Length: 346
Length: 264
Ligand SMILES: Nc1ncnc2c1ncn2[C@@H]1O[C@H](COP(=O)(O)OP(=O)(O)O)[C@@H](O)[C@H]1O
Ligand SMILES: [Mg+2]
Image (cartoon, rainbow over all chains, first blue to last red; front, side):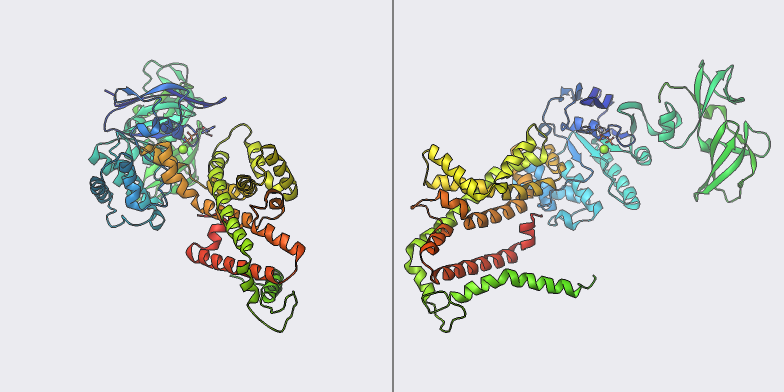
């Protein structure tokens, strides 16, 4: 049974609709990422769950109870803000204790739980510091400890890694995931970083323009994107506009192989760059290398082909491959190509 | 760090001289042993400081002005904090109008304000009352407090309130524990400026104060209208000294930049 359920949530600001329709079932202990480009309604959705934004329509069901109209202070959710929102005039310990104090927990228990939580986020010894005396990563851990110490039913995080540099971000991602697993807490995290979403989430909810585009486990979403948007926002893709013709897809005057499963009409033919290999002679299409970029573990090639510009990613195995100007054939397996009706999803 | 141009140094010190010279003259004159104001003078004495203690009315007015300033500043804070929060944090109809109204005492000449408030008080049958005087001063000092508290509120991160609420704080608890402490720099600066403004206010007070409620500036003004002797210089010197001590204490404790800049 779903632990947290969003039923047709909608939020309109006057004429402008920030969230068109968001329905979602989240299981207990699940880690879900709301992923989407800036302005697609991720924060608005999270704020509706938190109770700071009132939905125009729809319901929020938490553990069987309708909390749609419940005040934010009564929902018992833990929230980590992008700016962390640590109380500047309070010490780390006082920040973490705040939620317990509001629950009128006795001083002794409070102290124990704060100490335990600071231990958990590896901040023991920082209890008497003020937020301004902490580094970015430490601040984030205080924010996490403050949200978790009240034993919330759901943990909400709004772009929690946004303010960290790349190295620290990776470290905090691993730490967050480990902590979440250990506590088994239902978690919803907002991010616009597809790598972060894929590496952390049990399930990714892809949002675009205020609507849910696709909900799937990261691997499934990567392998079976619902359409052009999903295939290009999550990883790279070659998306070719074509038409079903018999048992294959006709792009320009090239016939490309596909598992069509009874599709017809105008389609998008999607093939991931890393699923394509070079062939010296022949190939499904032939093209000319216009540019290549060395990325360490792989090469990224840009090619001109009769079906339009295409990208190919080739693992670096230590041998030089094609160079600019080379004419090469491109080959891929029919089952690696994904064909979706054009316009079915944007 | 670039070197300050020499011309700027000269200007700076000329400006300081311009500000301090009149004060210095007043302080020097207060030490005369003559019965009239003269400068320079030959004999120095403390007789005019002694004279202050024999003028009980000045002492009474001093305490009245002190209490009046503190009360007016405190009442202004109590009104300005909610007003500043509403104006800085919310959009509502007539928001600009409300702000303009609250700030308008700054724009009106004090003499106009004095006549208007006198009219109002006589309508209410409150002429010469202490309550009327307090209310009048509160209106005049409110804009100063409001401006500094709005500045503090404008820099406030609302995620702090949301964080507090999500942790179970009621709206009141969030205000008392998080929002109010964050506004304290603006409130403190506003209170001090309001107090000083009220303590110093003359023009309007001439209309509103009465025989029983004569503020120190009004008492001094009335005094020089009749007599010119170094007594007022002595009183001024005492006030200057008190102000200096207060400034030094405040600077040591909090830093004047912080208080008067309204920054956290
Ligand atoms: N209070 C508001 N009033 C009007 N429009 C808003 C408000 N809050 C957010 N929006 C708009 O709603 C859209 C979605 O915002 P948001 O949920 O913050 O996006 P995201 O977090 O995905 O970047 C944006 O276009 C934003 O400008
Ligand atoms: Mg956002």
